[in-house]
Image (tube, rainbow, N blue to C red; front, side):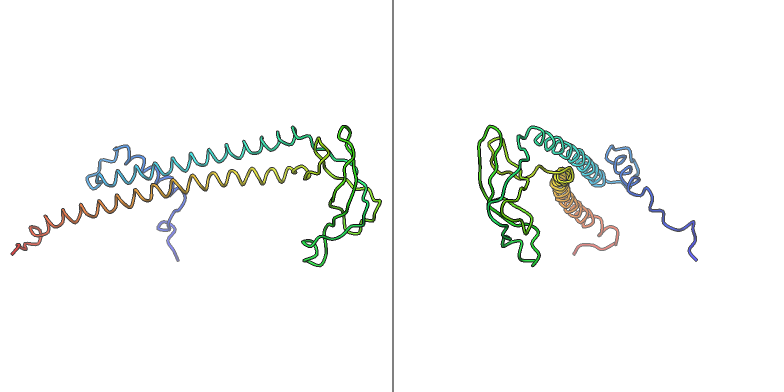
Length: 210
């Protein structure tokens, strides 16, 4: 049976580690075993944490800006839903017949919008729509066909994608830069340690150079 007093306590480990890096980076850790390289490493860790925090803040800002922009674009858009009359029977498109059960079809139709006159074109209709049927379509201020407005779910997805993209790029760049600098620091530390050991080892071991 595992002793509860000796069991590891993972809670707060990351926070404690970051706090130790903060103390060491500020030069407040005066223990004799703490080397200048350790303080430099802690400064890199603090910089990485700050960069990730900044990336998170910018990602939230990008998410909010995209959400507001999408709503403003929908409000400012002049698209309107009008009635169109089909002049041909619905024909399933090639992409819809791949699964064997078409979800939509295409048909020639005519429509009009006040101030833009009469229009005609190919519109998307439910499968089996007969000629002479009335369907609803979306058009712009000139009466041209346009996609239907995005739903709240569409705008939320676009906003989330913008935020995730910003965070991924910025946090990834910060991790790459600090990781590269950390590897260079480790290499310099190892070289310094080897040089110091080469000078100390003969005296410590009693070996004399021949």
